[in-house]
Amino acid sequence: MTDATTDIGVWGDTRIKPGQSAAVHILVSQSYAGTDIRIPVYVWRAKKPGPTVAVTAAVHGDEINGTGAIRHMIVDKPFELIAGTLVLVPVVNILGFERHSRYLPDRRDLNRSFPGTHEGSLASRLARAVFNQVIKRCDYCIDLHTAAVRRTNFPNVRADMTNDKLADFTRAFGTELIISSQGPVGSLRRSANKADCPTLILEAGEVWKIEPAVVEHAVRGISNCLIHLKMIKGKPKAPAYQIIVNKTRWVRAVNGGLLSFHISPGDIIREGEPIATNTSLLGIEQNTIASPMNGIVLGMTTMPSVAPGDPICHIARINKKALKEAEQAREAMSDQSLHQRVQDNLATSLMVSEMDEPEA
Ligand SMILES: [Zn+2]
Image (cartoon, rainbow, N blue to C red; front, side):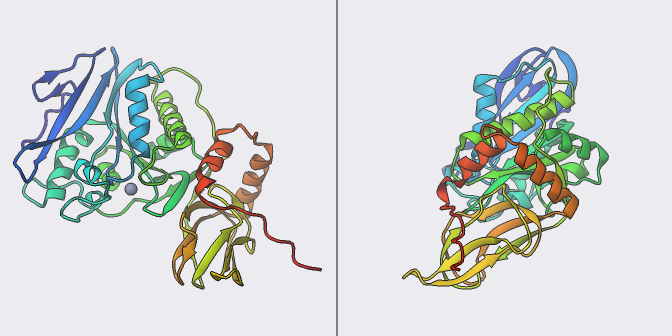
């Protein structure tokens, strides 16, 4: 496969002029039976020139909430593009997606294989094709992910906030939580940033699901970014609060047993407050797991049964000032806010209960 042209209107034999949109594809591999394997791509061009923005999903083949968000943009056109080009890739890891799997059939993680090579493994070649034909031709990229299997995430974005251009773009997305990090070596975002395509990732919801509130959250964030770049008109929708986090921590189970949770993803938690109570199969209380710090619940297990060491709750550490700001914003929030609806939506698979009052 040769390196692609820099002209965003040229996709193989297809020519897409400003003001036109078209479904095209990238040839990435061949099946065991020798048939071509292609990734579908939707290119949406405004009449006016402007930035080119890629939105990618399912780099991990089982993380399809972003696929739902991109399909909504292609089918329902929730905004009018007035400048620039959108390159929408609903499923990057098409081979993992076919098997409902995070990984490729060679058991490699595509998101550790960027920017890829022409002569390497299946993962490396697939990464290279996407990198050359999408990332290298784009000015920005938004890569949509979910939590790994048996976990869920409250929507948060992750980006290298030391890059000013990317930091502005990331703040514009408008999530309550921004995790500042470069991303692992070989990840799409780290490689894309190196190639001068500022890239953030959204982490929201669970694998194998298209969750309505998560889709709404993703599309709201993408719209906010496009408003920031003057590619669409409108007023950005601000989050309830916005905190940049440098440290996160997994809280792990101490005993084997069943958990009753006292918090849900997106909750604000103070140091010492209970996360979950662990009981034996016969209901005998073994221990209560408390938060080791002030923070916001980024992600949680969706499996109530645990063994010692199992991760149960992922907390973003915040300082006292941020804690107060978040608590005040939480107080002022309406039941109909997107924040609350996402929380209600995500918590449906978890049994969340109040702590029993200690007996007098
Ligand atoms: Zn992922």
